[in-house]
Image (cartoon, rainbow, N blue to C red; front, side):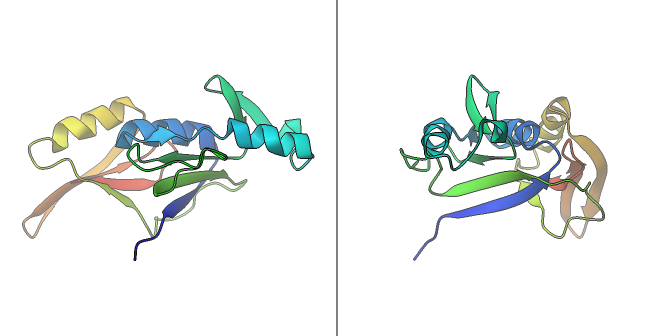
Length: 149
C-alpha cells in the first residue's frame, strides 16, 4: 500500500519558498483558487486570509508545491502524491534542520546544479567529500539546509 504525503516546512515567506522549491525540483505550485473561492463564499475564510499571487487567489499563509506527474484533486487544486507545503510561522529558523532534502543531480551534474540553485537564491555552505561519497550542502533562501548529491 502507498500513501499520498506532504512534507511541511515552516517559512517566513511561504510564497517565496514555493517559488524557489518549485524551480529547484521541477515541481508545480498548487492552484487552490477554486477552493478559496468556495471557502470565501461559505464565510470559512476572509479576504484578509488570501492574496493575489501568480495571477490567481492564494492562501496568505500557506502554499504547496507538487510533483507534476501526480494527480490533482480538481475541487481543491491539491496534489495527491508527493508534495511540500510551506506554512507561515512568526519565529525565525533556529538551529540545524533535523530533516532535509537531498537533490540527486549525479556526480557529473553536481557542480552545475549547485550553480543553478545558487542562481535561484540558495547559498553553498560547504562541499563534503567523505568515505567515497560527495555532496554540496546548501541553504535555501530562508536558511534551510539541503544537499546536492
